[in-house]
Length: 166
Image (tube, rainbow, N blue to C red):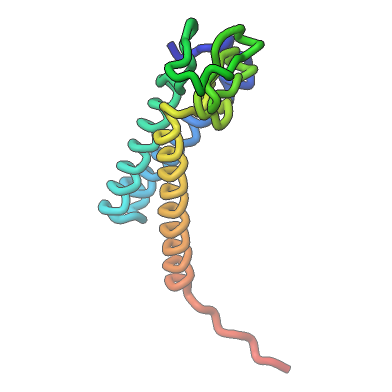
């Protein structure tokens, strides 16, 4: 279902890397909340919810049809009859592009994403953009918490007296 093209080392390493980085961020968060007690539980819950939404969106992009033109498709209107893909040897809508990796035409194709081993097209563009937004939100939450922890550590550090100036 997911491997619409033969998986090479780059595809597998990119996909596994994306999942591992997110799970590593979750593990660090759990450590900081439970062991080090540096984060509040509310912030931890928000981070884990955003992380879960990001992983759900990534899974949806990986497993959903990007809007591939089915084989044997024909134009429903006379104006659309001019589209033809020489590589697929079939009808292609005006807004479709041929993916050389997947070897199929995808409607409103944005790109072939190596992290999902799938094209981003009309049918899975929304979850892909949501995945990117959730990742940005995770990064912002982590940076804000790290900045607050650094500020608190600086404030708790004992101040040493300055040596007299000559």
